[in-house]
Image 1 (tube, rainbow, N blue to C red):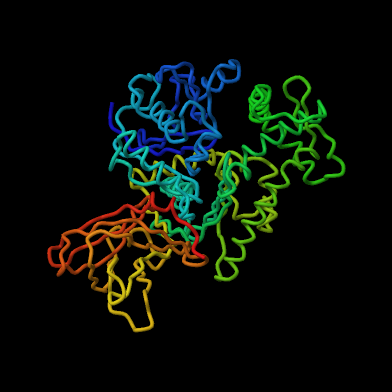
Image 2: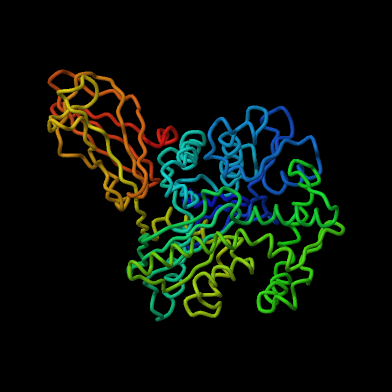
Length: 537
């Protein structure tokens, strides 16, 4: 078996692995012949021994029919949690870190699992993994750093992890590759312009506006989303609240999510929603166009008498609709202020195929579904795998994506005449310190792959001291600061230092300190430090 460069869409509800086969991108079929290309992001521990575990549909089935099974879903969205919150969601000393590790190992590289990608298709040479857009935009979100550590260290990929890519950016990469691949066979013009990607899956609603060049390059112009709301803004929230509404309708009392009956109802509702998608879409579309006539029309009926009408599901959907309007309102404001427009609209993620989601997006953008900017055929055919396929496109170097590091960062420099600790520099009499900016924000990641050094030459009176690093998220807004102890390289009283920063392709920042005379360098990864940030008063 040959080695593969793969893309992984590690999703909230489902995950997809993609790879190149005979010059086409394929979604890996987990479970062998008759298996699934969508692998449920679900894990079940069946006994005290660590090897007794199941993932995917098998795990979900075991959890539904056995009350003694310890199981977890949606664990990706718990990766950014503070460690003090782990025990609220996980038992037996488990955490989102080791559960994620177990799940990804099982589907990717486990030699004990005959259905893992490695056992079925061969060694993984390189991997690109998609993450929610908020994990890139929010400097205080630790999910990105934790997932990177899991893949590089716990799973042993090391430098074979090319990058963690924003989900809508991965989808844009696939759109560009697909458009070019399709039109290479004829004389149609390859698309260039602004592509607006709306991604709504199980956990988040993310939006990216990408500039597509004539050379099929992808540059991110603007991004936004609702990832900070966790599991309350997308498909998982809708399913949960639909089940609760149907239960209350039948029994006139509420059901707790820890109740085994709730888990059974969730499984039944999710299965029905997928199986009856086309029929239910027609019913909901009639309601959208004529609410008064079709409000009481039944849409879902599951598990022996639990039912919901158009009016009832629209009430459940209302908070999600408001969130979509808020995000796309900010997008349209940005377009207007910057004299920009979008030339194509690409809807990706499983929940974007839901009729009410589409209607909310079109209404928020003030367009109709038959708008020429919306490629309906491409959206329906490919949106389910777009993020995974796009990650694979990037892993194989077919599309050049340019993402930005939008945060402004630097360190605090003290007056060397007034302190014996920290980096010192001669300042004006009235100044006690100054901010030394190392990254000005809005840099393309390619520009930050090598350290950007300040021209200031710094002295120190100690070899080890706490250093204040400040961050202004998205180069505007509140200032954050932290104190982290650092140790200077090749310290002496005569040592002279320069300080810089760099950022890797997964948006992890590093502080670089170089002693100029000896050219000795110390490097500090700042990713995990951000979890300790507190807001300055």
